[in-house]
Image 1 (cartoon, rainbow, N blue to C red):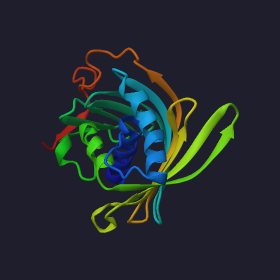
Image 2 (cartoon, one colour):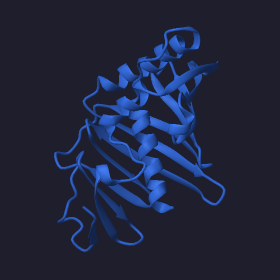
Image 3 (cartoon, helix red, strand yellow):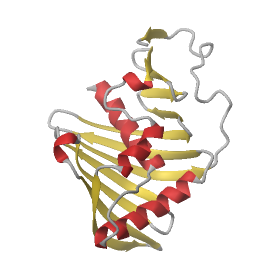
Length: 220
């Protein structure tokens, strides 16, 4: 379940950062939702890099966990850290360091089940979702839209429902929830977002010297 939890973190973190949609029918809810989501997409994608802190909850019949952390994204590369793990990817390889076990698992990104390469997020939104505009509300000075998303072909999708709370004023997704067909609910709250943060040259590569005492399991 820990591996699945990592996968859920990756899916929803990438969803937040790389949101992009197209190919929906430009009528009623479809057009309204597309315009709102595309506004966020344009705001995020103009950055060379992004950094955000998050709170992630994963709940199922036999598994409940909450993690807090932050993520860095630049093109296909990403890094995030929570209380239990540090995950680094150069866009091809993924290093997952589990603090408690003092072990680092190395995998090819394409070999990880249920994960999505940031460059492939565009495909997800371009194909296979329909939209429903639910509501809007004022929170302080911010206007928040709630949008539900459903797979156009439910039998071929691992998702049941995606719920986005979009902050139009800040051009950010405040909260995203994913309900999967296997009964898991994943919810992320974005606490802060920094555009174009300063990133070290080696940020997206595993530092062997820094972790010389860590057991490495190379699955490539």
